[in-house]
Structures are given as C-alpha cells and as structure tokens.
Image 1 (cartoon, rainbow, N blue to C red):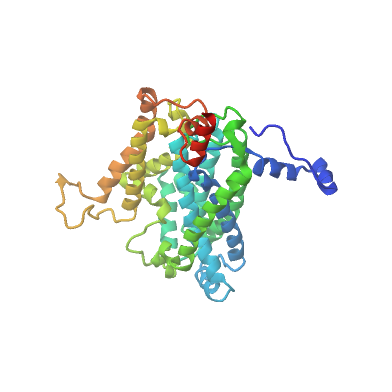
Image 2: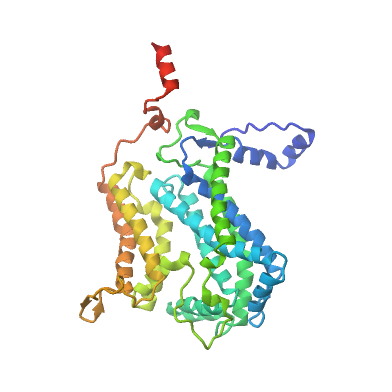
Length: 438
C-alpha cells in the first residue's frame, strides 16, 4: 500500500544506521509519508487514542507494581499505602484505574466504527481478527487487575467468574483448580493473577504491533468503503492526520482528567474499599461497566453452561464476522436498512449493560404493575436481558447474512474523491472561479 520508500538519510549517522537497521526509514514510511485516504473522519482517531491508553496503562502499571504486595494478608494495605505514602501514588493509581475505563470506552467506539464502516471485510480480515485478539487480552488483563486490590468486590467477583469455568464438562473443574492454584481463591490465585496482569499488557503491545503491520498492508478503510484508486484519493499521514489526531487526543485527555481529578471513585465499586472477607458476601456482585453486557447475557440463560456458552459465543461471533457478512458493500452509508438494524444493535448493547448493572429481580419500570405469564415475571431484568441477547445473536447470525443477500444498496461512488467533488462549491472562492471560467 505504501509503495516504494521515499526516505533519504540526511546525515552520516542516518546513512550508517539505515544500512544496518533501517528503523528510521520504517518510522518515516509508517508515520510520515504513509498514504492515507483523505476522507477519514474523527472516528478514525480512536486508534491513536488506544495507543496512548495502552502506553499510560503500561507506565502506571510498572510504577504500581514496584509498591504492590501480591499476598492476601498485605495486598489491600499495599494499595492503601500507595494512595497515602507513595509520592503521587494517588495520581498513579487513579490514572491506572480510570485508564482502564477510558481504554475500554475507546475500544468500544473503535469496534462499533469498524462494524459500521465494514472495516472487517476483505482484504482486512486478519487486521480485524488481531483487533479481536487484543480485545480478548484486554478483558483478561482487566479482570485480573480488578482482583488485585483484594477488596470485597475483587475477591467475590473472582470467585464468581472463575467458577464459571467449572460449568464445562470433564475439564471445567481441572481448569478452575489450575487457575486458582488450589481449591479456592486464595494467595496462589492472587500471585498468578498479579503475574499475568503484569505480563499481558506487553503481549497486547506485541499484538498491537502486528495489528499496525496488518493495517499498513491493505491500508486504511474509509467512510465510503471504496478502495484507493489513485494518489488523488490520499494525503500523507503527516501533517494532516497527526494534527487531526493530536486535537482529538487532547479532547480525550480532558475527559480522562475529568475522571482522574474530579470523580476518580465514580468508576470504582464502593465495596472494594473494604478488605476482602470470604465470610461476608456483598449484596450485589457486579463487574466493571465494560463487562456488564456480557454479564447480562450470562444471567439471562437459566442453565449455567448455556449462559457461559452464550457469553463466550457472543465474543466469538466477532471473530467470524468477516465470513458471516455476505454484503459486497462495506460502508453502511450506502445500506440504509442495515444501518437501521445497526443502530438498534447499539441500543441493545446499552440495554444489556443497564440490565447487567441491576439485580435480576428488579422491575424494568419501578412502581408499575408486574406482568406475569404462569410462573414467569415478564417485567424483570432477566426477560429484558433475554430479549436483548436474542437480538444480539440474531444481528450476527440472521440479520447480517440475510440483509447482505436481500438489501439493495444505494449507488456507491467510483472513487474516494467523488463524494467531495460532486458537491458544488460555494462562497467567494467558488464565485471567483466561476467568473474566471466565464
């Protein structure tokens, strides 16, 4: 996609290094002159935002690991000591804790953008799959990190989630015992989770490098979904997109700082401010907000194994999406009917998150008469979760492949430049051009 390198070493040292390790050439071709579609909007800036979030998590995590003690008798106190006795420990801890939420916020926007504009379609299947692997690694890292403060929600959340693996026949109990390092969530579990939580961000960084490499082979997708036809469709990545991304990153950092400095505990469970006690179970065990949709799916199925399969299956569907979607048109800009189903899909994901944050027996609408059918309460969170889960699964397994075969898309432009050039210009410049032409 990038074509022949245009980098020319300007100093003797650069020429010497370029002949032995062309790392400057690689950076120049990847981040300076890389030809990028000229119609990318601000939804494409979240890739750079995610890279920044990963960097923040790794740096703050390394510092926190210097002071954290992975032992059930000292873990909770070590976190409190970081907050009170370590220089700027409160800032580092809040940046790390809030940074996890910012990381997932950005990755969800990134995923939904890819779904809307068809960034998973050929020839970008490997790029999409690597992104899904990053998402899975993020979920594993976040879960293990959530256990480390060893508060009430940390401990009991670990018990609930790790016990889910026991639902798998034959191997479930063995996997759970291996993960625990014993027969219950205890000190060996905490040690293993700390080790993996420290390791996985570097694995994520490695997969991110592959993700960027896979991106540079076919090049960026764009809002039209049309392939680059000529150099007229592209601009160099620098300065056009470096400036644009920098502006978007600055706005994102304002949101980040808002939570770090003003509402740091808004994204933390209050029960986690209490030391873990195996004998006292919190009234409502709930995961972090970015796991809530899948938690709602898990609870919506009455059978434990069925719930686990549904939850993991909902994630697995993302991996095979490039082969599920039968449409030849990438962007939903030109698929009005599918666009409607997509917006409903977003609403359903939000509903699942809302259901996951509430008790299963809570009424959907408080103070409203409950509707029942036999022994079933039709106004409960469980039934709302079931309906939303069915739509989530139907979106991938039924709606996406069927609409790809039956929907008639709108006319697609011949090139990336056509949608811009097809609109008549206005203003003094256009008037001057028209006068000159006349």
